[in-house]
Amino acid sequence: MDIIRYQKSTFIHTFACGLWMLLSCATASAQKYVGGDISMLPAYEKAGADYYSHSGKAMNDVLGFLKDEGWNAMRVRLFVNPQQQTTTHNGQWVSDANVCQDIEWVKTLGKRIKDKGLKFMLDIHYSDTWADPGKQWTPAAWASLSDDALAAKVYNYTKDMLEQLKAAGAKPDMVQTGNEISYGMLWGRPNGSLYQCWPSSSTSNWNRFEKLLAQATKATRETCPEAKIIVHVERVSTSQQKDNKGYTALKNFYQKMTAANIDYDVIGLSYYPYFHGSMSELEGAISYLEKTYPQKDIMVVETGYPYAWAVGGTNFDYQKTYPYTDEGQRKFTADLVTMLNKHAKVNGLFWWWPEYNAKGTSLSGWYNAPLFDSNTGRATSALSEMKEFLTTPTAIKDIAVGKTTSDNGYYNLLGQYASHPRHGVFIRQGKKTVIR
Image (cartoon, rainbow, N blue to C red; front, side, top):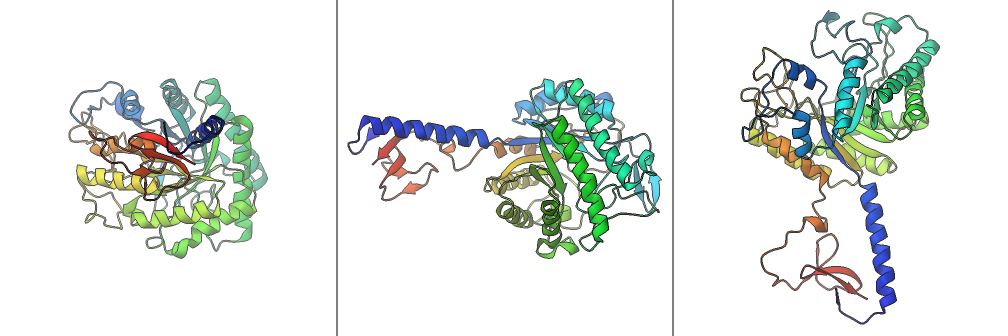
């Protein structure tokens, strides 16, 4: 170490120890997670899907490949009784082969994830079918329960599912107590009395929802005390979501969570640009949340962008910035990662349905934004881009060392040039330099 001015060795020792402790604490608190919701992977494997690396190398271990690509966490959804039903359009039930994740499915896949040394995020839907802002149907077997009995059922069900997962070697590291619950959950049954929670909904509807959610988080905290509890919404757009001008719906939701003393650790967000608009809208939501709830971490638990063709229902065209090509998808991912890494409280990024791959199968589907090309079976370039979320672009470890060391300038610990260094630790000629 080059000491510019004389200083006592005791000062150096004390300062170095303090700096080491500071950096150690920062590293420990900066755990970040990158991965995807791979809930359908076993189905594609069973169907004989042909998976290849981006260069065309065949793979027989998709989870291992994702881990080698730098992914460190996976998400899996759980339905109460997916054999009961699937999804609804205009009040009609229709079949959907993608709604198959019962507890046995999740135990098996969850154990595979844990056995690979990856973190496991459990996404509990509290429904027999897809739960999202447009539908949060109460499971058929729970439909006749009173509100008090339903709250008890939520508690007991959550506890039972987590106990089963623990016993199976699939203990979750993160638990979503509900999926995209911006407007509540367990609304009732279609064509019946519904307990939706719009920003303008009755206090009684919100109180009912908060009581149910509190039982879900209570059971999670008691059964898996080390797991991070995630409360997940998707109100991140001010232009595409009419009730969210100025992030009104988003603000209203988390204010109510605070007022109701809901126990959770992480704010979970969905962001699909073709539904939610430009990336700046997501950043606006994140900026508000990190300033208002500095004690909470923030994760983007669902995102995606097409590599070819539009996703059904697209209402925002981002193709001038990010064409529907392999490179367009990669650039979207790179820019998303860059933006998220500007926000210290954002510690999670998960791609939704990255494993979708019809290559070599007779499967059909509507999703056009996975990270494998169904025409070739090859991983798209964006898949490899995801791991960059785990880096800190301005940190010292990411400063490249050139072939020469002719630059005699001083740089601070963020890698920024210091024109007139006074006191502190700096980098000069690739070495730490202390100026007292």
